[in-house]
Image (cartoon, rainbow, N blue to C red; front, side, top):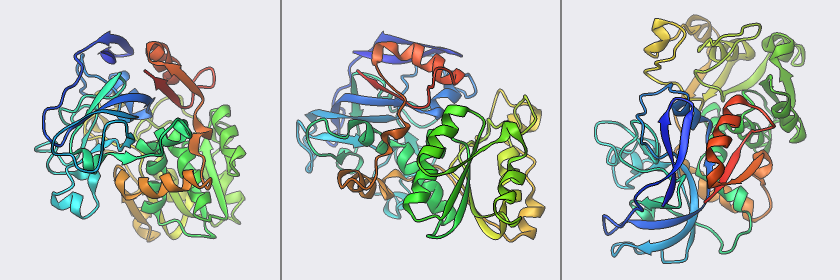
Length: 377
């Protein structure tokens, strides 16, 4: 089958690899109909992780079940399904408590597993024609048959729940003001989710015009940090107080206002300054314990200079970590079906799998309006 294979930094190729097969009675094989490129894939693509050549990318996947293991009870051939990017067992202590992003079974020695991602277990990615799904009864979310809402449903694999997760981490409530740093796909989903939850005003900070335009189109207030300090811009519009809540949808590859180089802690420190005393921060943006491309020796080892004193002084609460997709995906699916949510506004390009190499290049360079790419094998 064809699949997107990592070759070296800034190079992927669509190559022939072995088609997956049933290896356990609880497996299913899914014929992939849509698979998305994630900003997290770019960390590997750019050589900013320990990913080795040969890994098949793709943790945002949906499609039609083609083969069912003998132990699977709730699914059948022909079912249309979307899978959380988290691979989870459903029975370890973390899964039972709802922390499926930190499953203790699927990736021995490390809390959490994912498809096609470095250090996240042996699970092949789904930027391919077929995908093996383990513990399928638990990991597959059934969808209505047909092709309706295809580009909405694919976002249930990761970025829509992850954006919503950012709001959960920050405990966004109706009537509150929220600052979202980053207008990439997750940042736009965080802003969208904050509005769905009833936030009165949502500021979105970025410097890419197309992304800021998307934020404005959904009712958020765009803040271009290339035009001035985003903290000051937001405080000018909040009577000098700041926002009630803040969300970091950027992570460690952040660039500060007025800088032309990475400053990994800049978003965290900006949020500490932006959010009012006793507010809360949600951090779904990715931070890593090892970054070979870090700008200094501390950053290369995942240690950043964060304004912990000011965070403590202001009594701020902070929630971090990757999304436990299964906490949210069923409810978000039903909002899509009922017409209450349409997250596909963030999708900029739908392309055949054969164009993956070009799509990675353009998405990484943030050119030609590339904000979210869905590939169709």
